[in-house]
Structure formats: C-alpha cells, structure tokens
Image (cartoon, rainbow, N blue to C red; front, side, top):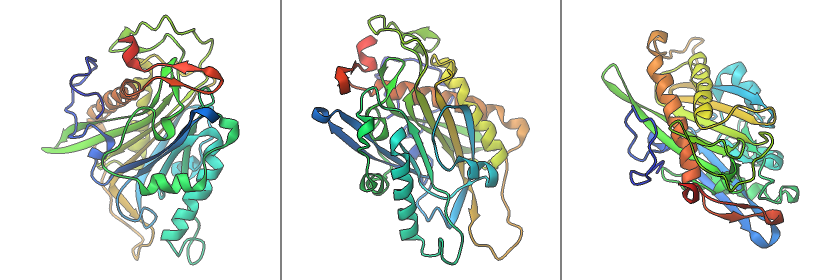
Length: 341
C-alpha cells in the first residue's frame, strides 16, 4: 500500500518503507473502515477507526500529543490529550456533522468493554476527528449512525484500503479526489529498527496548487478555488520511545509535508495532527506513585523529524493516488490523481 513501486510517482524516500507501507507496520496498530455510498441520495461518506494497540486502550493508555496547525475544526478529545499526554480510546475519523454521533458511539463501545468507567473510576476521553465532505456528500442528511462507528472499530485490521473509503469517501484535496492515505518509514536507532507510520484524511488545499516532489501537477481543467476551505487530519503512530513533549514536536513536523504538497494552511482549513507512541504505556491503575518510561535524546531527534515529514508527504500523495472518479451531490465531479499524471 502507500505508493506502489509501479506508481510512476517519485517523492523523497531517504528512509526505508515498512513491509506494508502502512501505519499498521507499527506493531499493534489496526485500522478499519465503514463506507457509505448511495449516489441516488447524494451519500458519499463514512467512518475510519484507528486502534493504537490490540489490548484494552483505556487500561493501557499510549503517550500522545496533538498539534493544532490551524484550528478551523470541530474535533473532540484533543484538550485532554494535551493536558495528560495520553490517548485512551480508539481514534475516529468521520465527517463534520458526524462528530456527535461518533462520540456517542465510541463512548458506548468503551463502556461495553470497561465496566469500571463511570462506575468505580472516572469517565473516558474519546477522540473523534472530522473533515467537511459537503462538496460530494449530503452532509445535511447526517447519514452516519452509531452502528457505522462501531462497525469501523470491529473492522480494524492490519490491512486496509486507501483512497475514497471510510471517512475519506467524500473528501476532495486540491481539486481532485482526496481521502485516506497511509505510509510508513523505518528508522534505525541504537542498532534497532523502529517504525513511524502515518494515516491521514486529505481534504485540504486550493485547486491547482498540488505539488509532487517539488513540481506542480498540471490540473488546469479544474476550476481554481478562491480560498482553502478543506481540512486534513493526520495521525502518526510509532514504536519509538518518545514522551508526550517529543510527540508534540513530531506532530508539528506534519506541517512540512503539507507545505511540500501545496498547502499554505489557509484560514478555513482545519489542519490537525495527533501523534502517539506504543512504546510508553501508561496504566490506568498503578500501585506505584512513580512509573518508568523511556524518552529519546533530543539531540538525535532530527532523523525522527525528517522521517515524519517524509511519511506524511507520501501518505498525502497516496490518498490521491488511490482516489477514483466520483460524481457527488449537486453533480459535483472530481477525478483521481491518475487523470492528471
């Protein structure tokens, strides 16, 4: 997955790709989709779920951080991540008007698998992210339901599709078909290989601005948009031993990839990155006041930053590469990247 070797697209690739070239190359991470399409009703939407690891995420939280690159967004759960530095639920991607439904659904899921939540312990901070898919989807119809969200969680696997699937079904990026993209990179540290993976939902940018490896892609037959009104949600996962401060620094580097691909982070764009490490697990319950975690030497972080920029850039291009022609609501037509290469 990611960009296949025969894609004909060349981008920076200093670091080796993982076996699948997906975020699921990081051990334990899984991704699932539910896709909703009914062309007669103008429905092009869906849900994507990311499980940070295969165990109980509430009982074994992962260290995490966010970077709100531009805050024109309606995501839920980011405040507590920044305060406590952990994620304790699946990460959900959906459309803007699906956030409330998704939040209810993932909360119910967490209650089902954790009888102590809201009973003998506190509540749960569920993470739901969104982009506006109203260019192609009947967003006013609010077609996402709780069963779709639970279904995406249940569908989580090591292998998943990219492009116009799940939450990416109705997304448009720089005038062409956007959606779900993923990639991974291997970084050697102290003679041990670690993985950095990215998954994102591309829905940002101005028509005509797409750049691949520093070269503008000719999309002259697309009417140029006047302003940047979309969004991008980026999730970075790694098995590198990074603490929450370092994960915030990593999340910020997603900005480099957005700029490389043609974004100027416009006023109307909700550009949000979430990063987490599966190496430092924080238990919900602990008999000890002090727990041990590992961190990276800050002086060695440059290779992590570089690999992050590279993996997010490929994930963006992969989301477009796997996109296909769609005729959405109000007759809006978008084409995949293949049409312009």
